[in-house]
Image 1 (tube, rainbow, N blue to C red):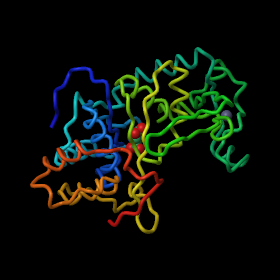
Image 2 (image 1 turned 120 degrees about the vertical axis):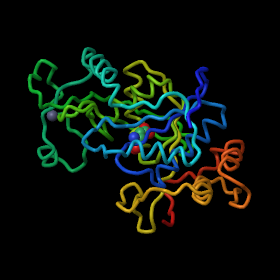
Image 3 (image 1 turned 120 degrees about the horizontal axis):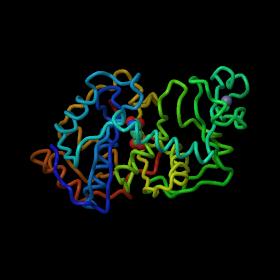
Image 4 (image 1 turned 135 degrees about the vertical axis):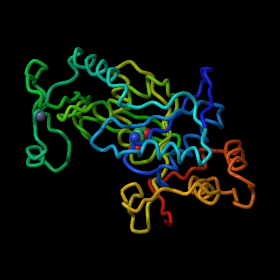
Length: 301
Ligand code: GLU
Ligand code: ZN
């Protein structure tokens, strides 16, 4: 169900699934937390399909995800956006960074880098290169990172910080296979949609300083961040990585289980006659402070 709501809201949240499979329990959690938090604050809630990496897109997955969300009773505002239709925005952001000489082409192969170090931190081999050195279509583009600490307060995980030069190294904003990186595209998307609050999974906590840094370079405002714990199996497997992380069934049971996982413990299946009742209750009683401050929690699947 789409609500047509053109009024500009002070709170604008979003859910941004990658269309690489069905909506599983892990993504339901991110959808629920972002939705309940937005609606609790009388905010707008937008949907974006993160299909920048076309090689990973599974046919019909986006439609399945939207159908499942609708069956679960989510109502979104505005038109669903697709990263694949926003390439011109990423291109202009990339050009802005290139022109400011904040970026450089890199032709290092993964193998070459692995041989140098196992840390995954880029050692800056190509830092001296300029855009003019890049006649080669096969180069990635990296952004030069600073040695100052980047800190922010996560609404669930509390204080988090990184020194990008030590913890990450110059990172890729444009891939050598000609795809804009996740870090660049997500920052541009959140800005273009006027997102004020990002509620998503813990796996993206360590991407946040990179995103804040890009926001600073591009002159974008910084949204408020909240990272919910990941749902893992007893064997410590992340649900989204499981091949059997199957499509969820939108029953009241599933929704109540998800709400419990998010620390909204007082809900009981028996309290509700239907899904609409559930949402009404969850939205008015939602409290982000009750979401456990944890990296992950075990869920029985
Ligand atoms: N598309 C990303 C994912 O499914 C989420 C992006 C984000 O929330 O920033 O992991
Ligand atoms: Zn390089």
